[in-house]
Length: 211
Image (cartoon, rainbow, N blue to C red; front, side, top):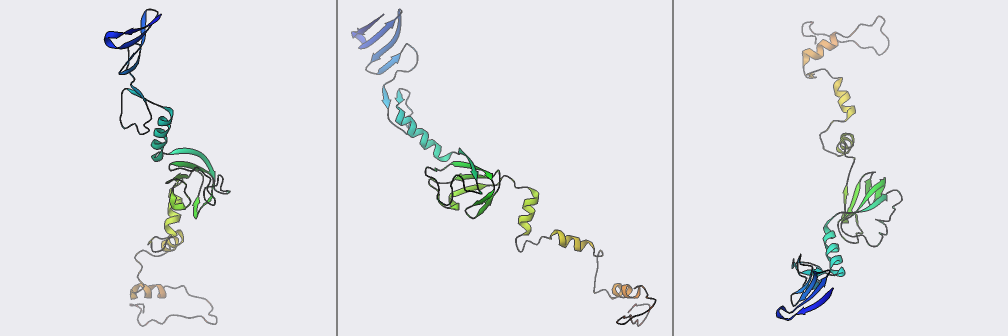
C-alpha cells in the first residue's frame, strides 16, 4: 500500500492492495477509477447549477429540502375541532408552514366553519391566523348532505320533501278555473241524511253544466 505523486500528470495517487483507490488532481478528488471526480463541496442551497462534480454540504441540502416542501402537503397529524387541539385558530401554535395538513378526528368548529371527522385542513401560507389562510376539504360530501345544503338556500327552485308530498295528493292536470271540473265535484258531493246547522248545499242552474 502506498501513496505516490505522479509529476507528469500532477496527480496524487493512493494504491491499496495493488489497486488504485483514490486520486487527487487540480480537477478534484476521485475515488477508485469509477464515477465522477469531485471538484468542490457546494453550499448552494438552490442547486440550480446542477453540477456533476460538486457535493452539497449539510446546510445546502437542508435549505433545498425546506424550499421544496413549501408547495407540498406535509401531514402533521390529527385535529380535535371540539377542543381546538392542537390550537390552530384562537392562538395558533408556532411553526405552522404552508402545506402543513391536519385531519379532523373530532368534529366541531374551525374558525367560523363547521368541520367533521375526515375533513382535511391545509395551511395555505406560513403562520396562518385566519380561516381564509387555510384550505378546507370535506370528506363526507354525499347525496343527503348535498340535498340538505341545497334546500337550505333561498331561491333554489327546489321542492322539499314536504312540498313534494303535498303535490302528490293533487289530481293530475288539475285546473281550478275549469267550470265543468269544479261543478262536477260540487254536484257529486255525497248527500247527508240529516242536515244540521251551518250545512250548505249547492244550487245548480242546469244539471248539464253542473253550475
